[in-house]
Length: 329
Image (tube, rainbow, N blue to C red; front, side):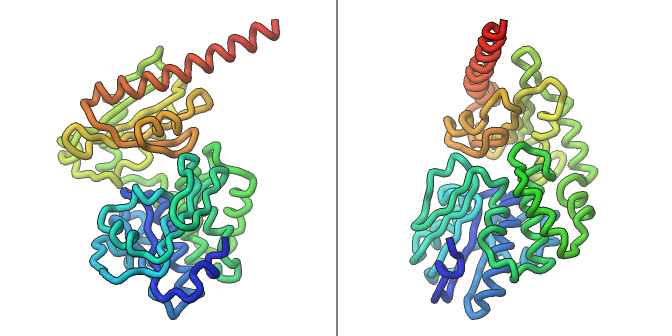
């Protein structure tokens, strides 16, 4: 795909991602925003996202994000990044429907292709990595490189998840040559937590429950607890990874309440469970080791339904390992 060729002649270009935007979503959207502003200064380029967390305010262009979508004029080109169109915020959908051309760039294996033009690469670590591959490298500067870098480190867990490839590491090395303070960036956007966020993490760990002989773990925050600690969804990023990092855990589930009997579910795993399959069954998606979905019902109903699919995969994995052991004997 040639981004500039697809945007040729366009005077109005929109960019959006998924609801509750994470580091990859924000980073890739603002990276594309910076690139198009630089290469097509005559065009109006607008990013539509729910308000990103404070940790992303360091990215150039973050203050230009529109969360209201009050524009009524159609766009020539409408980009959907790191998502399928169904997961964009509701106010942006009317603008998407009016657009003359729609383009989808994503790396989620559950994305079977959407929009008029789509470029979906499941082997990529992140959508930010795909943006890097698509842009003219002479347009790179410290601001653009930093936006891409944030997207990559957030979706790779700072290069520690299994989606990190040799190419991902090469891109990361190329980006830090532009001189931004990457150790500070990693600390402040990925690892550092406020006191309240740390308290919430402690609460989640304290109230977690292990099941399936201690190989799976689940924890949940209801709306009452979130209000007590004055935290929102952006403050909960990364909590599921702390659950997954506990020794002996093959699959971790973290849930938080979004409405009456409604939950946002995050799943993390090792090679024992393909959580993208679990999430897809409930209308979500993601990657083999990191996925998510929305569910309705009581907390116990949701966990029971999830555990049935997790148990099926773990039993299949165990049977395969026992078969290999028998064959070796």
